[in-house]
Image (cartoon, rainbow, N blue to C red; front, side):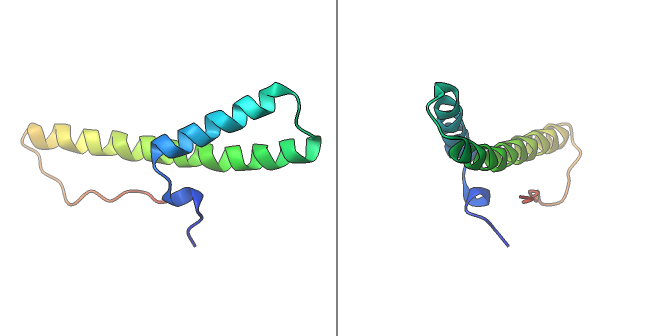
Length: 80
């Protein structure tokens, strides 16, 4: 089952995460809202980590192809 966060691009997830952090750091957020924002931020962080890991794997594959070693089609890890 895919969540709305799992469909976000790295840039969108990072922007949303930065907004959440700024809001939380302001100190004007009630505790219940802080917990909800922390949970949302954790999900967005995981999306960012997955997107970065996928990019790293793709770069490694491209480097190996450049060196004459070819691999099968690249598949991302869509874990969220």
